[in-house]
Length: 350
Image (cartoon, rainbow, N blue to C red; front, side):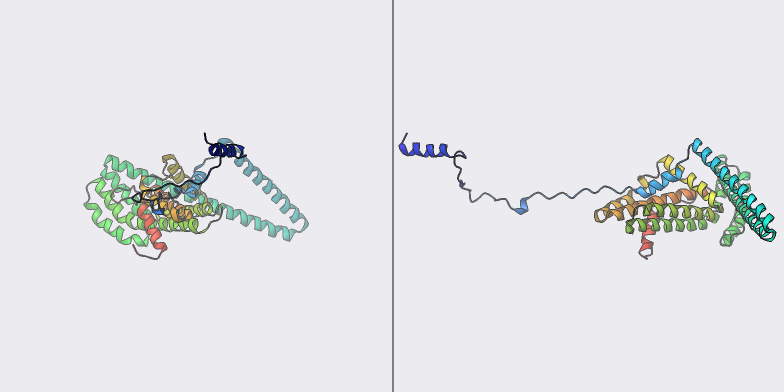
């Protein structure tokens, strides 16, 4: 080994950082392609979670939830106890006031009597509302049984009942006249009920559909534009309650406060039991649009899906409140209703 080589090695060994590493040069062939920015792999887009319509799912779950038997007993006994305590306290107050100041006591007694009369009037109104809803249920069940049995006599009797229910509706005057003229010519139960549905239910279906579109538009707009906690849930709840009540009024089953709650629970229970409150096959177009909007804004995507679920609740309410089942006329589709609702949001004609 030469002295120069030995000295270089000794210098490297004496270095505290080990052997010295210098820059090395590599020769590249001129024909070899050098990597550039255009050869870099594309950056994947972040996968945004698909909108689920949580506001409407929360509303449906809350509305369909039945309290336990123990909870019902608790609230019933609590309300009864509070009513008894208030009644006894009011009686003691009025009698004591009459003993001290007779004229003032009598005036307060008259006020209490008027209040009790108003409460009785409200109770009678609620009972009448429940009676109307029960009548619509009976007519619907009778129509289903009549179609199943193909009983012409039963069908004519049902048509007479429907004419009595809608006899005071001025918007159905022409429909009733057409039904009275063409009804006797029908000699088949399905044909007679189909004619009745086409004449009496078509105008009512159009009015109910407008209510569903308005509710879906409101829920979608508030969900998309109002980023406040629980605002979309409150809006969805109030809009759906009002929509279901209006649909019941359109089909002749005008309901009171308690009747509306009962009807809402029936509709929501049906949707939750069948899984229809989740995103399903008939929401493919709506959910696809909502997923595209999610790439721009998740709030807009949630608004589309909440509006679609509101439309589904409205269609279910139409089925529940309608005195005749959908047979000759087609049931509205969620995607069509939502399209009309969102198109109306931008003041365009469909």
